[in-house]
Image (tube, rainbow, N blue to C red):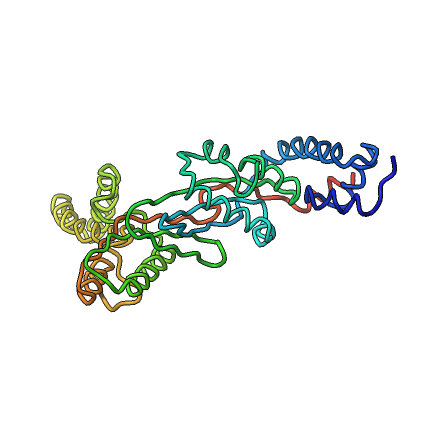
Length: 310
């Protein structure tokens, strides 16, 4: 059975697959569009499985609020170029929407969720995206907030996604509260806090940091030719100040407020809340940076070219 250019167009619209692949599929299935779709999906599944093992460390970190529910997600691709693809961006937004509305408990449950306005699952759509775009695509992580006021912030087109979650009482000027939340979210993006406050830091990590700072201080004092016992006494006093510096670096509320003058984030939030006639408390936050912690493959381009020429 022959096929026309219109058949190729219909198959391409139905699958999103490239023109040449559509022509091959129609040739192999005798021009039957339904069989060609099935053929492409079978091929696509195999191709997706092959690509699934490839490192995906680019992509998008995205944050948004859907009907009061805050969501931040990270979806990875292999190249930054794909992260700018409209189809990929739409997929990320839909994933965030599903997290908000269907409340999956983990990635496995998320992949089994129904994709918006479709009879396919997230996993089905992800596989089709891999086939169409030609790269491994992986949903890495997500966080969902159902209580309090969630303020989203996306930095540099998806390099960093942040949600800051606030508890607000006695304040009617929510525009000012939202502005505060945006400022705090920008601080989180820029200053990379790991914890909300010092009480959130694991006790073992605190003890480890104290030991590191103590040993450094002892060595510094030894260099001043102080007796060992005296060097240790002075070092122990130095550790307290250095631990304050440590908490300033890793704890959001202890950090100097970047838009303020010698004031902490905690004090700034208190001042804004007081000026608005109520109280504001930062409950928690989530900061996702695309690709953080993923070992990126370092390709030897010259070796790759040489291997192709053998």
